[in-house]
Length: 247
Image (cartoon, rainbow, N blue to C red; front, top):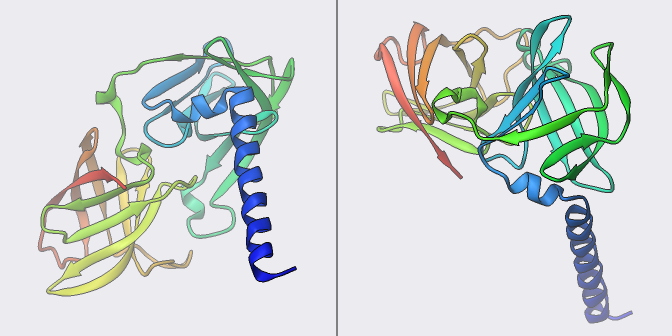
């Protein structure tokens, strides 16, 4: 086979793969689900809920276990069939292999505007549920938490702090901080209860201590970081206002 023939063959295979993925997504409707932005999905009977912003159908939500809401990250995958993954993020295990855990995955289909589990019964966190039926709805965008944004870059007006949260389960992302004209690599982490931490380095170790931390408030994609401890900017700022922009 000549080089030209090989290139044509590889191109043909690539087109087939892309086309088959599109067909599978269309068949089960999950291409449409993944394109739905700023949508809430709720099964009131099961006490499960999650919502998407602009992140391929994935988002934060909760699962109700013994009457208590457990925050989870939910990922929707296209395929034949589609699948729904429930992922638990443990902020006490940062930068370890136990940082997040997939606690459940089950096949689903999309029909009449609803995400429905294929199984009539399934188990999540050791609790048995009947068939799940998630109904879509709108939600108040003023209730969005800053840690929900994925594939967004955050920075302040003067670019003293810049970081990017990728399309992963963990609410953290690498970036840079400019201190006295010097650029430093950092890792920014959104935490529960409106807290944040900043670590030095692109990939910190689990034994590292944060170089800055504090609390935050946000109005959708505008967040104000209030420093409780700041050894990064040497207490130059009491707070920094950052904006999230879609990449």
